[in-house]
Length: 412
Image 1 (tube, rainbow, N blue to C red):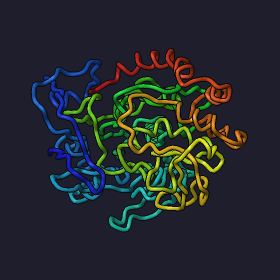
Image 2: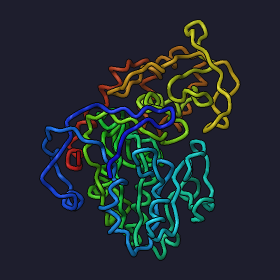
Image 3: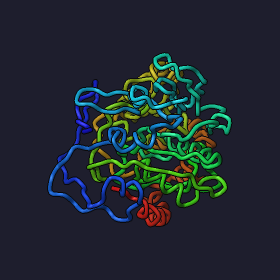
Image 4: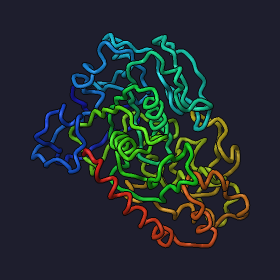
């Protein structure tokens, strides 16, 4: 099936006409092996085909099996017009889905960031929905009982503290312990064209970053799953029986606009390109657009110097943010809605906000900031007045080490 990129609601799905990748391997061979080099460039332009659309490849692997699906609102099969949810499609094809595991934001994507998602029943399908966000972040052995395999399909944005990759890792761990195979349907990474940011230190790992990777790691969720598995990063150095169904006709250099917002507070391309940099504000008391219609496209606070900024806004409760930071307060800050696609992580915004904070004692939420940064050093660098260039220079050695590991797992 072909993925015809089209307008979906207010989000424009844009893509550049570029050279598509093409090789001599069959689809089955591509699944069975992990190439270490990019395929040869073809002299034609093709439509991007996400793995979920390649039902002819993975349906034979599901037939006659009792399965669970890890999915959310982005888990769809695209059509010429619109889309069908993967779970609905599989049920119509008589695939025996026993239950659905839901990540942060829930199965339908309508929960706030960090909000605990409760187990429930999907009204449309009657399937049990088991939350993987809250007290139960890793499927229990009892929850996997009687299953033959787990199918994972969630759109990621390629940022370490975006928790879908942590959910994926914990699902892989649980399945490795139970001896259940995992099939992962790959999707493009809209921030997959670069690697940047501080690398996670082992002492600071959490659900906001479980492995020693840079903030922006430049891999699809399928490539990253292969890395986790083959580098023995699962608990106890176990390996899961993993099959990654790859994309077709996509490369890391391509621009990809997500047709469905991956979470309530990433509404468009601008928010997604700014998220690696503005997401660092989550570890501070600065508002990064939550409680407005421009999430991760602005930042501000009531305690920033009103003499410095001519842009103001007031966060109020809304979809995806029931209690935003600085709720009901006039915030002084910057509007970044005109920002073009970024190729790096910048600390300029957080340095600007800290420098112009009237009361710097209010700025950092130290524990939360350390978890987002992945190290204890970044907060100290900002407080000491280091520039963006000086801070970024301290990332480079770790980034180069990571690139060597990453190269082994690139599929595109």
